[in-house]
Amino acid sequence: MSTRKQSWKDSLLVYKDVRMLRILLLGAISGFPWVLIASSLSLWLKEEGLSRSTIGWAGLIFGVYAFNYLWAPIIDRIQIPVLSKKLGHRRGWIVLMQFVILMSLIVWSFINPTQNLALLIAVGLIIAVASATQDITVDALRIEQINSDEGKAMAAGAAMAVVGWWTGYKLGGVVALFTAEFFENLGVVDYWQATFLILGILVILMNIGLMFVHEPVENDRQKKQMVNDQIIRDKLGSNNILTNFIAYITGTIGGPIISFFKKNGLAIALGILGFVFLFKIGEAFLGRMSIVFYKEIGFSKGQIAIYSKGLGWITTVVFTLLGGVMAMRAGTIKTMFFAGALMALTNLIFALLAWIGKSELLFAIAVIADDITAAFATVAFVAFISLLVDRTYTATQYALLASIGTAGRTTLASSSGALVDWLNGDWGTFFVITTIMVIPSLICLWFIRNKVKIGEK
Image 1: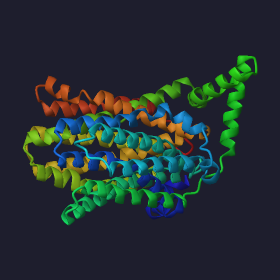
Image 2 (image 1 turned 135 degrees about the horizontal axis):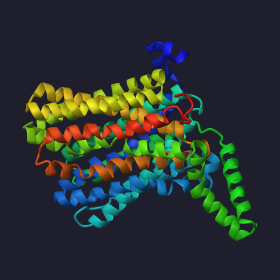
Image 3 (image 1 turned 120 degrees about the horizontal axis):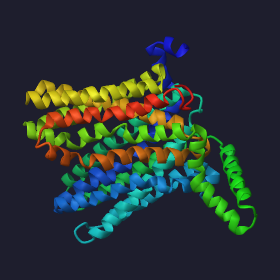
């Protein structure tokens, strides 16, 4: 009960915890590679004269992020020789992936895109795989910074992770663009290649910062994993090289899934998975078509940039931190309901804009409301799945739950354009439908609200 009597000032003081600074850095480490394979790569290819379709197809490398759960069990189990002993299991993996990214940047600095496009994209894919692999262990290390019974700190940590990701992505992008422009103005012919070497220095600085992120000693996790392996060996009925190997593989892949269903029970586990899959679908449908809608209703690129991008960054950071405070004070479950209701209302504002027609004031309100909604929903969602994971399989379970959420948004939302076409361009009805899409996830959440085991609710 003391959490509800706590003042906003007291809740905000949770952000002063030194662990929040470490989580901010981890978020930045996670967001920075997107600067390389999103903004920088696209602009580099554009300025080298490659076609829009080529640049678009190059974006397929992002697909690896939706499937990193497939190799997450390996990250949870395999120790990196030398690095794991010296730095710890999680930090060892991060440093290895950062080294791969650094080497890739050095290779990029020697490539001419028009002559070696296939090699350039292949190196971009290596960066994406390293980044997606790094995300698995970054999320695990972030969660393990905070004890499983610290619900308020976990909510604050989720907010700091989101702010850190956007900081790594946005500020990294600022550094990349200004550096490229600086070298171009100096008359450097291969100015992007030189820029990648400077960005490599940022990677090194992030690794130095990583040394200040403490990794908890997790002997207990490895012991529990071995206990689960032994249970599987006992079921197999014999003890030899083959059964030991089968037990290890089964424990690595099946252990996290068995643990999740065992902890929650079948009905609640399915309710959780349903909620995670459905929660942000309405928002994703809206987000996928929003730019098209803005353009069709008559707004200029400049107006879209000011409201959607300029105000969006400030709004996202401020309301992400406030969303973390709300999750601390009201609890994660209530914040999820609030974020869901906010999502539905925001989509109705877009429907109103579609019915009224071009209105700069209503456009500004709709875009700001959408950013506020996204901030609250993301913090609540990250905090929720962070509290759900079993610390025996942190990396695997978080990656799997996050991927299920991503799958819901990317697979179903890809039909958003077809839905608008089917409605003959009736944007108002489209946004009303996206509002209704929020309801099934909230029904799942209502079903599990008092039964899900996430520490502080």
